[in-house]
Length: 277
Image (tube, rainbow, N blue to C red; front, side, top):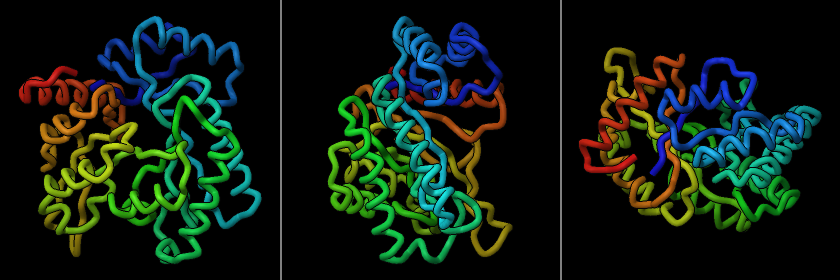
């Protein structure tokens, strides 16, 4: 198991980027440039990664490929294809996006996300992205979200079946699927179910902590820094460790110092659990 996360300080060269990676103690990384970077720059970063025995866990898309604006949708799909091509080029564990939204916010809620029309459009667009690249060294994946597909491990399994492409796999973010009081109350049971159902397909994991705000009604479950919430991170790391060389990422933290603290906390949890990170 390898721990990774974002690099927050600016960098202008592989050596500057690597200095931050080493300070944070990462052994898994998000590829540090995107598909618009010149080929020479991509090669320089890839060589740096290889020379330092780092694992490329993710190439991110983070664009709304389900946008209701046709021009915007096509632009975002083209970028997703470019990022999947980059992931294939560098041998990343996965290229990851979210399904995309019909709302004004690219990652926002919309009641239409529960319709058959939305689901079939998602399947078709995902197939289109994968078929354009036909990856052999990587996979395309969708990070779960609380209000868009996939919202549960069962729905993720169905999505795998319906997309029906070898180049599609799982990016597991269990926290984003803990969207009800029942799942929060039995978060450990829910996390176990995610791993039980999805283990053969998991390529990358976001390890996050959650805390219920029992003052704000009717329900507010907030993402917090690792160790500040109620998630059994030791369980998460044990289940991740059983998968072998799968990257585990901390995320959504404000700055370098917060990532350093989170990474140190995760390593301490691993050590307490008898695991090697």
